[in-house]
Image (cartoon, rainbow, N blue to C red):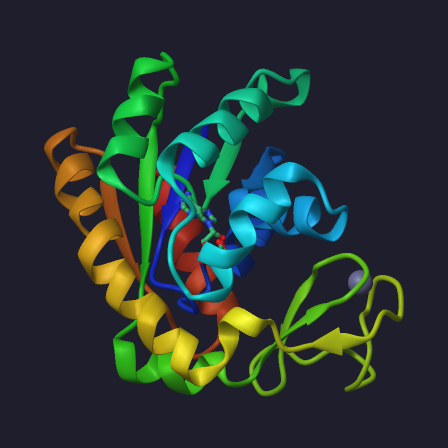
Length: 210
Ligand code: AMP
Ligand code: ZN
C-alpha cells in the first residue's frame, strides 16, 4: 500500500503517518525529516534548503524531487510506504506520477487554520531523534524529555508564530491544489483531525481498510 498524507502544517499528519505506518507494517518517509537531517549534518542539500525552510517557504521542487527519487529507490520501500509531506506542489505530484510510482490513496488530515495556530505553539521535537510531541495533546511520558532517548525537546524555528502564518499561506496557495489533482484520480480521502489523536488514527484506519 502506497499512501500520500496531506495536511496543513500542524494538522498532525506527521503523527498520524507514524501511527498508521506501524499499524500496516509499512514505512513512513518524511521529506521534512530528511531535509532537517541534512541540515544537521551540514550537507550541501541542507545548506541549500535552510533559507527556504527558516522563512516558512517551500524548498524548490527540483531539490525535493531528487530527494524522494533517491529515497524511493531504496529496498525498504518495496512493501509500501507513506509519503509524509511529499508532494507539496502540483509539479511534485506530476513528477511522482512520471516516476511510475503508484499511489493507492491520498489522505488529507483536515484541521481549520484557527485550530492549527493554537496547536503549533505547543509543538516540540526531540533534538536527538526528531520525534514530535505536543505539550498539551501528546506530552512525553515524563512531561519533559523524549520518550525514546531522553533527548531535549525544542520548538522548531519554523513553528514560531509568524512563520506558522506564512506556512499556512503557502499551504493554501501551493499545496491545497493537490486535493483537486488527486480527487480527479479518485484517490482523495478527507479525515477530520480530532482533539484526541487516537480518534483521528481510528478514522484513518477505517478509510484505509475499506
Ligand atoms: P515538514 O516537517 O513536513 O513540515 O517540513 C518542514 C519544511 O521542509 C517545510 O516547511 C519545507 O520548507 C520543507 N519541505 C518538506 N517537504 C517539502 C516538499 N515536499 N516540498 C518543498 N519543501 C518541503
Ligand atoms: Zn528522541
